[in-house]
Image 1 (spheres, one colour):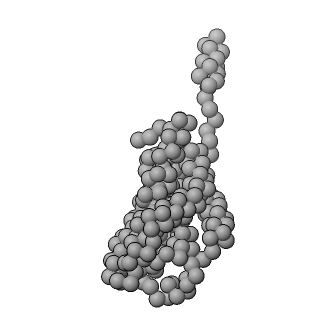
Image 2 (image 1 turned 45 degrees about the vertical axis):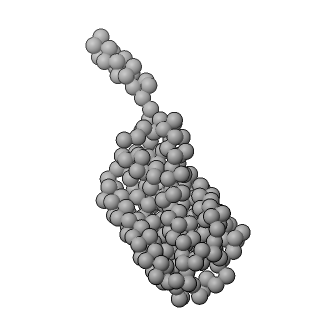
Length: 224
């Protein structure tokens, strides 16, 4: 009968369909990522210790303060943008978060660099290249856990700009790691603070995004 044929046709068409996955809210992904980031940051600071004169530099050195504020905005803005870009209907939040991250870039790299380069006592190269690489490495290590948490959320959601999402997650996560480094590194010359702290989210974020991009693509997350 035609009705039976239609029922069989519908059954055949629906046989290989996968069930629709529920996409979590932005706050859920952000809560998990920040919780894991806080745990990893606390462990890293416990191992490394805080800057020996942290109270002094926070109170008196505007270059240090500018980089700290800029890194905070980069970390929050990029992580929120990566999560929001994976949830349909949150495009405005994605744009606002990206703008917040860009403001952080201007503060950390622009204001921070201008202030540090104007303070001759901070420009002397007292830190070596190995110190720079060490700080960058610690930033990337701290970033691994929050980056994996964010990208796990992204893989289960519906990102509409997938390459940007991966890059933002990596940059924001390394920004978290750079915050830990900035608060714990005893080296205070301007070159080191600019290259190894303020610029860490970009260099480290690019490095971190490459393997994640390959892994997610291998699992079927195609890029735009």
